[in-house]
Image (tube, rainbow, N blue to C red; front, side, top):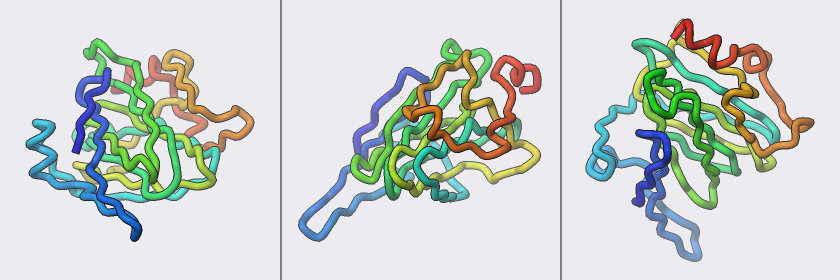
Length: 183
C-alpha cells in the first residue's frame, strides 16, 4: 500500500497493492492494522455505504456536524469519478481549499477524508458505484452541506455545465461563508 499526503492536512490518497493475472485482480481494500501502521491514524469504521450514479451526477458537498462528524475512506467499485474534499476547519490554514482526486475501478485509488471536511464527487463515466466507510453513524439532524458551485471554493467538477445533474437538496445548500456562522 502506498500512502500519498495531499496539500490538505490529514487527507490521504491510498494506492493499494493490486495483484493481477489473466483471471482478474485481487487487493486488500482495508486492513485496520496496516492502515494505522502506515498512516499513524487510528480509526474505527462502523458503517459502510454504497451509491450508484449515472454520468453527470454531482453529489455534495456533504458533511455531518458536531458529535456526528465523520471520517471516510472512499473508493470506486465501478466506473470513474472526481472525488472532492473541502477543508471546513475554520482555524485551518487551508480552510476553504479543496483537493480533487480521480478514483476509478482501474486505478483502485482510495481517499481518506478526516473529520472536518465536506465531501462530494462527480461521475465522469457512464455510471459509477461508489463505496465508503464511515467512523460514525449517519444522523439526519447533523447533516449539512455547502453549495456545490460556491465561487469562493471554485471547484472544477470536470463536467460541462449542461451535463450536471443535482438533487433538489444539493441545489439549495448555503455558501461556505454563510454556513460558517452555524458550524
